[in-house]
Image 1: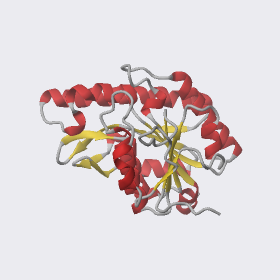
Image 2: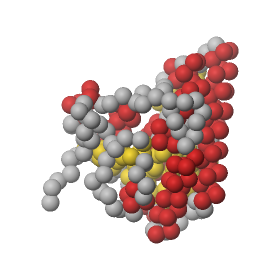
Image 3: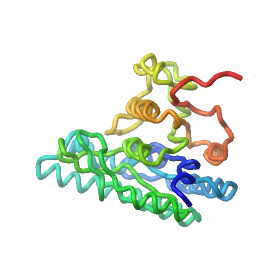
Length: 276
C-alpha cells in the first residue's frame, strides 16, 4: 500500500482517559468499556476493510495520578522529579498493556508504540517522534497505538506529551482525513451543558471561556486544552476535521467509523458546514 493510499483513508481515534478509566480513583481501568470499544473497532474494520486507523488513548487514572504529586508536565529537574518521571512512564505503560492486550484478544491487530522511547519536546510542544514504525505498521495493515506518556524536553528537562500533542505532531506527517476524540461527555459543552455542534477558528474565542472542566484528575488541561490544540491542528490542516464525542454509547464508535451518525458530538473544522 502506497503512502498516498494510507493518508487518503487514515483516521486518528483517541479513547479518552476519562472513558477507559475511572479518573476519580487511582489506577482503575474500565475493562468492560475497553473491551466494548475494541469490539466496535473490529466490527468497523470487518465491514470496511479499507479503513486505516491510528489509535491513541489517554492515561486517565494511571498517568495523571502518578504525575500530579511531581508536577511532571511543568518540568523535571530534581532527582525526586526524575524518579517521578519514571513512575509516570511505568503507570502509563501499565494502562497501555491492558488496552493492547484487550484489542489483540478481540482480533484487532494493534501495534503498541511507546512514545517516550523517541519523543522530544520543546517547552511542552512535541518536536520529534519516530515515524518509521508508524508508517510501516500502517503499510502492513496494523493499527499503530500511541498513548499519553512522558517525554524529554529541551527546556523543561521532562514533561508529559498528551495524546492530542502526539496527534498534532503526527498530523503534519500523516495527514489524516478525520480525528475522533472519544470521552465520557457528549461533546464540548457550553455553560448551560448543551453540546456545541461545531467550533471553527473564528467562533473559538466566543466559546473558549465556557468549556466545562475536566472530571477527575487531569494534569494536561482537560477539555479547554483539548479544543485549543485541535483548533491549532485544523488551522494547519484545513483538510482534516475533528469530532469530539462520547464513547459511552454502545455501537456509536462503529457507526461513526463507518460514516453514520454525522451530527453526533462537536465538530472542529476550519469553517462552519453549509446547510444544503
